[in-house]
Length: 151
Image 1 (cartoon, helix red, strand yellow):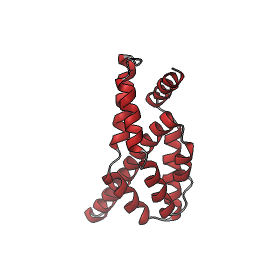
Image 2 (cartoon, rainbow, N blue to C red):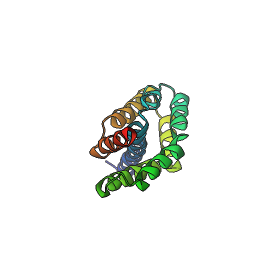
Image 3 (cartoon, rainbow, N blue to C red):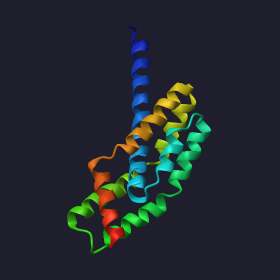
């Protein structure tokens, strides 16, 4: 393989890694949104998108809720009903909520715009799948908020 071919392959691998890292960041945000607000529809709109415009609109609608989500988590962090261990968990969730950036949004749109429909379907399904497959952090966040809602 020529060095030019090798560089092209390496560039493609890096591009794919950036795409899936951005997808992971979005899915982490969506997992926290689901854990705190039980909004499965936000995930469905993204995971079921078959056109780039629908995907972008779904992401936009989910991110519109970020400030409210941040406020809820910060309020829980200030609560005297939350233990030190729970505060650590909520801090991790807060970080995941704030982590998704314009860089990741640009990466997702740019990479999906240049691909075909099958690639879009794979990536949006991957985002939905990861968002629904709670990590221990998101599972714990849900438990904390369930307990706080009950009083």
